[in-house]
Image 1 (cartoon, rainbow, N blue to C red):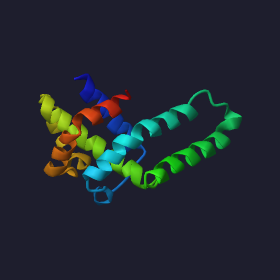
Image 2 (image 1 turned 90 degrees about the vertical axis):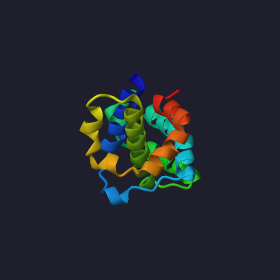
Image 3 (image 1 turned 60 degrees about the vertical axis):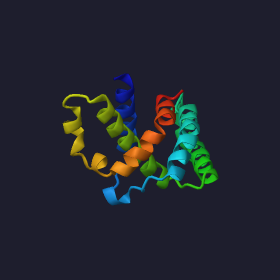
Length: 143
């Protein structure tokens, strides 16, 4: 149950920063799921590094450094700052849906099943995410 809640929390946090139409989300492939698994821990480490104890007068320089490091990380992996949040949204929502189905949480499936984010993940994409279940679980929990 804890892992489902963690996954949902990460999904909602990622989704909060991304307002995208359903058709703007990428199709999940082995390649982009593997990239996500590789990128997320580094991405998280960068955001956490710049999120601690920032003085008001350091906000703009810190944001600039954050942007530069995130951009460099994503560029290194062949992605852009526009692409990664969309990929993260699709993977996290698909993984949350998969986890809820697996856990058979009473009533929860119907609450989320009609949200566009969950409908955008195909059965084939959920099967792909199931293939990477353990790796995704690890990166979502931040281990």
